[in-house]
Length: 173
Image 1: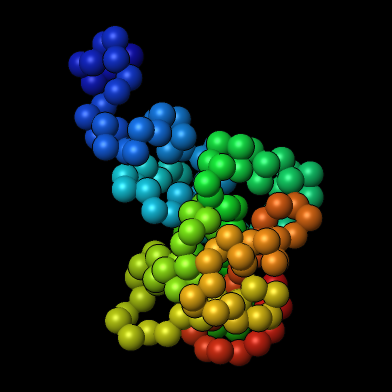
Image 2: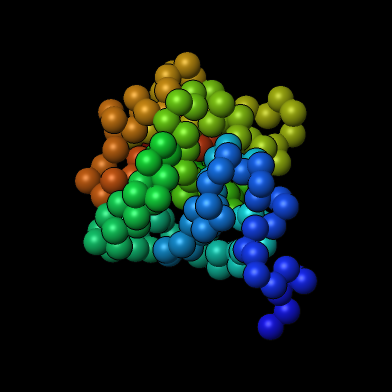
């Protein structure tokens, strides 16, 4: 077992600036992978990609209610300042698929900031519109994610959002 030459210590220099979070907090375990929004270090890019064939299967179809409950509780226990959000593509949109569906979003992030993060992850061309719906509603971009979570969270502890390139209502997820 090679230990990168640092035998006794688990602290890599890159972890010293990570807001004093222990390293294991930077990894989301559980089913699939999630993205910790607002992390300065992108620990998430070297995870195995979720099976590309399953991109059209919704999160709810992929996991049972019990699995989803357990996962949202585990995520919130590890990250009390973040909210578990599932983001899926609106079926009728021409936008690319999101590589990861689960996001841990800071409570004080605005919807507009979160949309900006999603645009970056989708590698959209500048000026390409991105609209995010919660329960067929377009939340105000100035709303905080904490407010959206409290208003729309489902019984499994997740908020479900879908994204589209148009302001069309109705997410047939």
